[in-house]
Image (cartoon, rainbow, N blue to C red):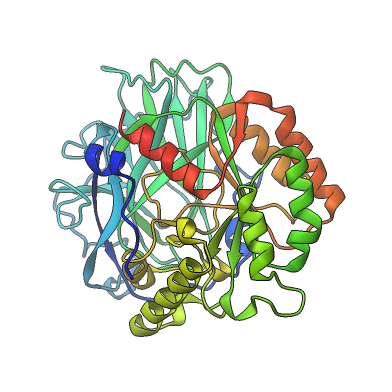
Length: 445
């Protein structure tokens, strides 16, 4: 049984396109991938108004995907066969990188690797940081009421660096900074990145964005950037409350509490654990669903999908979809939560046939999702301050926030729910199918 197709409005309005590639398995854990997003550490050089380079473009017009920084060998980039990915091709194209004369910094144009068109922009670092600056001062970008995304192809570093995107509106003293937790240690090939605002400096006027700066704080690493787009922003931020592994206390402790607030949740179900000691029963899950919760696949045995063969992963998903459908959870049977937040290009190529929405780690994102198989989440158990700060950002910038829980003190959870409620109509708590309906609506505008 293959995945349900996207709702009719999005099929009619937008295209699904893209090219992914597959290879090595990742090395993170279920918590770690959601850990670095909220760090207060900013781009290392902490720019000032005079920090925008004025030097000429440093572009090697002969560079290709085989040209590398001096201390990086060709063997560090593994050639892998592509497959057709599930990306949403809509929105206003801001830069297609066919002309990169307005870009400067640690960059090369690459005519051998592109997401769309004939080339992409390679951003490369050999000394701990790489920066690319685009000058749009002759024709400033109007990014009011817009969310942003771009296509990104990644090398495979050993750590988890962050990428920052700054909108100078109009200058460095008045800018909006975005942050994205870099997932390069997974062999993904091309992905779309839905970036979320992280910090506001001064009083940026987003109707006149004169420069865009991309900063990667990592050494010996390259990324390729392509297809920079703007998308409609929602009327309010959206929050999903994600509960993993179907523990019984999700029903006894958290379900009644969320009901008091009128909030739904999503539950990641491990089939082999259903009805076992301290785990949810089918009857309990059905009761939760009747109150707006949705039951999502979390694999048959909490399996790391990057360690399963294609045959094993297909069988795993077919078993989960069949069980969810037979037990009354058909509505959410095409939604998936990655065990350990692990995925790679190889597993995505299989899950693309079964999954409409996939939830992993990373941070905040756009409601106008362009990469529905890799929706980011924030670990809400690590501290009280971290989810509260994320909630503030989601409300301020009308972003998507998925809060991930396994076990949390009910008093701490109540504090989080109170903070959400205090935002009033600036935040909506939704489930997975409501998210799909909302980004389908935004992409059809």
